[in-house]
Length: 171
Image (tube, rainbow, N blue to C red; front, side, top):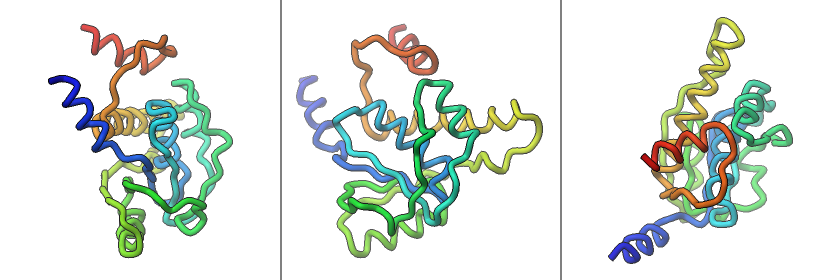
């Protein structure tokens, strides 16, 4: 019976996901990198913004902390996308969700809105600002795992949050 449940989950898992935020500079590239790491070769993942921004160095730093390099990411808009065949668009900001809903008018795609804090609004010390970015990163990781049906593999894990998740799941 377990096999039937797993097959059903695989059937519901989208083959292509687009993460979208305001500028494709913080939230959506973080989400895309996380999803690519969790589902290598299983789900096509891309990201876009309602408008084009500049990659945020704090986003690069907090992703590097968990072993994911987004330093080569180049922000793009919906109009810049080379591939438009997505099964699911996950919007992380209101402006991006409006763009996603427009996208659904012309494409057969499911759109979801995940309200996600904008860490670029954080103030205070460098560490306080990084904590806001880490909170967004960790929230995205949890939501992506839950929504896309992530199951831990038996491969060795990198240090950081990936090990913590495995330890919690193993008891």
